[in-house]
Length: 353
Image (cartoon, rainbow, N blue to C red; front, side):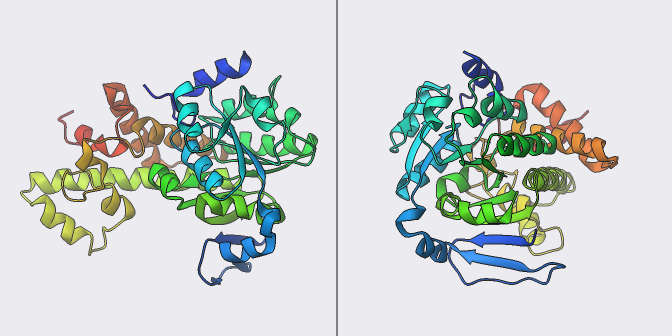
C-alpha cells in the first residue's frame, strides 16, 4: 500500500490529516533556442537565472506532499541551498525527506508559516483544494505576497479555481505539473508544464530549475494542467499500442528482440516503446525487466485517463481511443494490477477475453 502524497490512493490520508501570454520556455543549461511559432518563444538557461538572482535566488520554500515525487524534488531544493520545510501525513515519507535535509513541519500551516514559495505535490484536485483553501489551509497561513506552485496532476477547473483563490488571498499562483516520473524527480530532469503569468514563471525559475531541466509556459491559468492531462492521455494510448504490438508480434511468431529492433528504427517508434518496453530483458531500465516495479503505476495512469475523458466531456470531444484505453486500464486495475507499473497492461492485452 502506498503512503506517498501524490499516489492515486493517497487522497484519504491527506483528507484525514488536513481535517484533524507569449510562450516562455526556461531550460537548465544550453543556449537559448527559438522555434517557429505563431507567437515568439523565449528560452532562458539556469545559468542565466542564477546569475541574475545570486543570493536573492535562495528562498524559504515549503513542500507539501513528500511522496515518490515530492521528496526527491524537496531534496534537490535543499541541494540548491534553499531553506526547505515540508509536510506529509505519512511518517515514513516525512522521515525519508528529513534524511535529505528537509525540516519536517507538524502540519501544513507550520510548513508554510514563514515560506516565500509553497510547492504542492498531492494526489488529486480535491486534496489540493482542501490543503490550500481549507479551514487550516496554506493560502491563509502563507505570508502575504507568497508564490504557490502546484505540481499535482489535477483537473483544469480546480487549477483555475486555485489561481483565483490565491489571487484573492494576495498571492501569486502557477499550475505546474511535471513530466518525467519518479526517475526524473530523482535525477532532477523533470519538465514543468506551467500555466499562469509568464512574469511569475520567470520569478519561479531558480526553484523550478533546481528540480528539473525545463519549464515551459503552456499559457494562462489551467494551461499547465491541461497540457499534462493531454500528454498523459497520449502516453496511455501509445503504451496500449505498444502492448498490443508485442502481443500480436509474438502470436505471429516474431522474436521480441528482433521486433524491438525493427520498430525502434521504423515508423512505429515512440517514447513508450523505447522506455517502457513491456517485454522483459529488452530494455534493462524498463519496469518489465524489474518485475513491473512501478515507475508509473496502473492506478496513476488510470487517474490521468479519467481526467482526460472528463475534460473531453466538458468540451464535447469524442476521444474514442482514449475512452477505449481507459476501459482497458480500468479492467486491469480491477484485476489487482493497480499498484504495478502501467506497462504490465500487456498481461491483460495478452489474455483471452
